[in-house]
Image 1 (cartoon, rainbow, N blue to C red):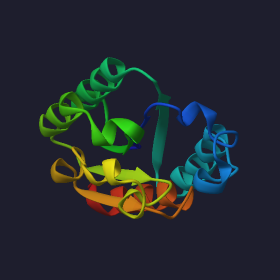
Image 2: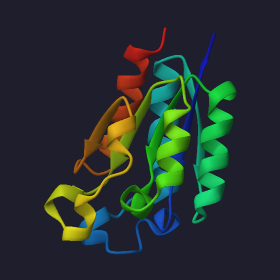
Image 3: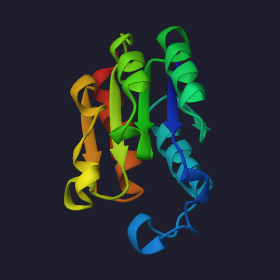
Length: 145
């Protein structure tokens, strides 16, 4: 049976490849989706790629993952540092969640030192660019029966 993974991406990630490529890289979110789909085929998984600039939509997708996903890859982007709502939605999940950040927030601005996501996810990958998404998928493959 194919394991369904929700890959949920937060604000401004629709601009990957255009916005601050020196920080976030030159790959687009579509390029990352292609990488994930290629890896997922090898792991008997499927990936549903989602992106929203709206906090409420991300909460809705996390709630949907409770019954429609085997695991979640989450790049909450700026909401990582501000969203109690996303934190609470993550706490309600009974599936593994891997947090991904293209850059390393711990090595950046002071305001990025607050993280509402890390305390309530299974694991975190940061600073490895697009490869972090593929590593997250591989991690989920080991965590999901």
